[in-house]
Length: 191
Image 1 (cartoon, rainbow, N blue to C red):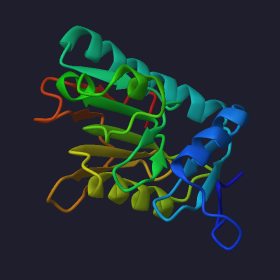
Image 2: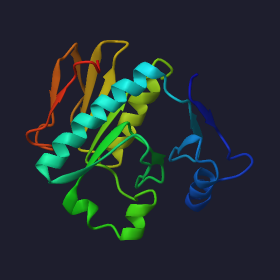
Image 3: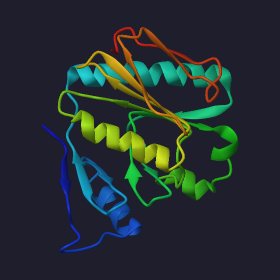
């Protein structure tokens, strides 16, 4: 099933608070909201995508626990970006110093912060174009490094602030570069 984007503006313009209430009232639904106020209804993932996502989240989480300079998040975490969009990357990481600047109440809800690092994993139901647009949205909101993993195309797109994206065919690992120094994402059983 392909994610559905609904333009609600002709009927209602959801505020941030209304969107949060909608999510809380429908916890079984995976929803996002674009900066234009469009509601994105995400489909559940299939078995292979779920397994791949578990592996990448586990690998990022394990490194984060050892490194100690940041905090990692899974695909269930929704972030309120500076543009007003609400987005849930498949995996994300935030420098601990930035995370600790949020009030405890902000950390408990949809944190109003853009991650330093995000990973999007394309499933069979995802349009590559929509994920590329999402990666650009992350960059516009302050993400410093992003990986778009595309198992269907057997490639990875790397997004960095102030640079054109790099496309790598069939890489076996990726570096966290200066954003996550020492992090190496092993792509075995993910790509």
